[in-house]
Image (cartoon, chains in turn purple, cyan):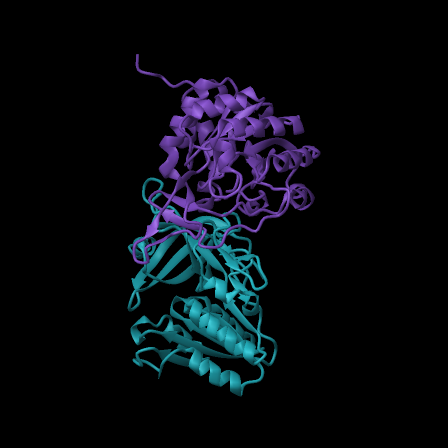
Length: 306
Length: 273
């Protein structure tokens, strides 16, 4: 429908609507071809890409929890070169592709960012500073403001593409981390990544995951994510992409109201591969019902008690 | 031939207990265009209510037992065992209620070579993966079919009447001896492998059973295919949760590279954990 303008600008990435898919929950996009025309989405964020292919953790890698799930996949991915050679060309030219960048050292992040930036098809980069289940790298960057600053600075130097930084929720002050990224030239922030968590099988007294700790995702984390998006949006001027438990348009609209310019659908795509498309349709419907002509006008309109 | 998977809200036609913890579910899946033996579907853990259901969160992978084309889609049968929250909720399904369905998914069983003897070995819920393979192999006439079904007791045995109706050779083993041979189903398998040089093994069941079938086949130089079961969040290759260790290193995704795999490609030691 052309009656509502759903376009948003996410730190220099022009999106046809504010719905993307979250890194690690959408493969490289092609897996969804039987279910969903990706051109219905604002864009997709790829699985995190590393310099070399990675094999991932020993199973069990996932476990269901109340209203959510734990995962410790271990950042298994095909590596940046195979992505550029095999995965990216398979996507329709009209699909906005944001590439997620990960490394175990700052130089690796920068090199992956450099190689991705050489492709016209990569609309932007999302630095994964927050993956909580890899022993080297990941969590240290996202949890330590100095390391985070150093990381963002290095990737910023390596690429002129729109740069998103995906923040870890496993911090005391999300506002501080948001400001650090803004200060180092990030164009936008994505939050939240999964919450570090644990579950146990009481019959065997073993952790449910081989990795012991995993990241919690799904509807259970939505109110925490919403709180953090709201806090971050008050701390910085750059746009925010809200992530955390979004499975319906209603969920996504809450994030927009709390200050997110766009959102990412994550775990919901597992149980419903059409979820992101349905969220996009539902946002348009909501806008129509509320007489909004531009969805961007909804962003950050939370009414606080006087 | 692999059919394109679809996501649909399936209508419950029939849901009933079948002895032990076994359940049979018949769904009308609109638009369903067929499947190949060994493929599976992701079913929501319980019927969909008036509002979205998010707890239990994840769909459950289930073998497609058989399907019959009807006006506008197909009637798809699923046999499963109640063993947790999701399957307990699914067992409460009543005709007319809706279930979220994604499928058919995964890599099917390859055909048995012409003139061979296909030994289909099923244990527990693994039996459900083998019915369509037995039916189609028998109907094609290209290979002889012998079905070996194992269960703890007669009550736990799945699908026996259906297999009997197929008119294939059927061997049953129960651990308590309440039906057929007493013992594990891999015991008659061993005898048959010794007697039949042209046998090919298709196995689906508990890991220990499949591992034993794989070892027996490998020791005699026979091909063995297994259909693995694993927890998975998506069923189509994106969550990477269903990784199974491969012989020689690395992982196969049970949903995308399997569920049917060459037994020789599986690292059984690491799979057993």
